[in-house]
Length: 310
Ligand code: PAF
Image 1: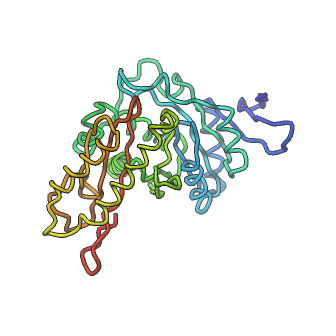
Image 2 (image 1 turned 60 degrees about the vertical axis):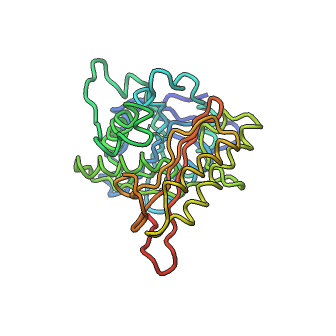
C-alpha cells in the first residue's frame, strides 16, 4: 500500500523488498524535490512515458542513469495527444506493474500527475509545431503532435531536467521535441535512444499488446520490409517511388489491412525525398486489425557514399 509521507508524496513499499520508490502526484512537491536536487548541483534526467512499461522504456532509464545523478520517470497517459476516435480509454494502464518494473531500475522519483494537475481547469495554451508535425503521423492523427509537444514542454519545465530521453521508435515525435526545445530555448538536452526490438525485429511498443497471435506473426514483416529499404535506398540511380510501391504491396500481401504511409525522408526535416543523397530515414505506419504500428530505420549509406545515418 502507498504510504503518505509528511511532505505529501507517496513512498510505495513492498513487504518482500526494502527498496522504496518515491511516487509524486502534486506539482508543488515535485518542484520542491527537483529544486533541492538542483541546489545540490545534481544532474537531473527525465524519462517521459505513458506507462505500460516495457524493455524499451527500461533502456531509456538505463541510458539516463549513465549521465544523470537523479532520474525522474513520468507516467501520464496524455489525453491531448489522442484523437476522438483513438484508443485513449483502452490504452494499457498498469500502475502497480509499472512501479514494480521501476523499483530496481534506479528510478529516484516517479512523477504521476492526474489530468487536473497536468491541465489546470481553464487551460488554453498549446505548443504546436508546424510542418514537422503536419506530415507522416500528423496527417493521420490531427492534433497529435500538438498534444505531445505541449505535454513534453510541461514535463521538461516541471522537472527542470538537464537531459530528457526519448526512443527513436517514435522518430517523428523525437524530431518534433528537438524542434520545440530549440525554438522555445528550453535548455534540456534531448537524448535519442535506439529502438529496442524483439528477436524477430518487431519494435517494442505498448500497443503490441493489442495484437492477436496471428497479427503478431504478420507484424514481424514490418521491420524486415523496412530493413530491405534501409539497405538499398541510397544513391541517385535508385528509383525510390517504385521501391516503396513494391514494399507496400509486400506488406498488404503479408496481411496488413492498410498502410497510412511509407516514405523515405530527410532525417531532420522529415520531408519525403525522391533520392537519398544525405542522412535519411525510412518511416512507416501500417494498420493491422485494431492496431496501428509505426516503425522507422536509418537509411544505410553505401560504402564510400554519403553518410546516411541520422
Ligand atoms: O512516447 C510517449 O510515450 C509519449 O508520447 C510521451 C513522450 C510520454 C508524451 O506523452
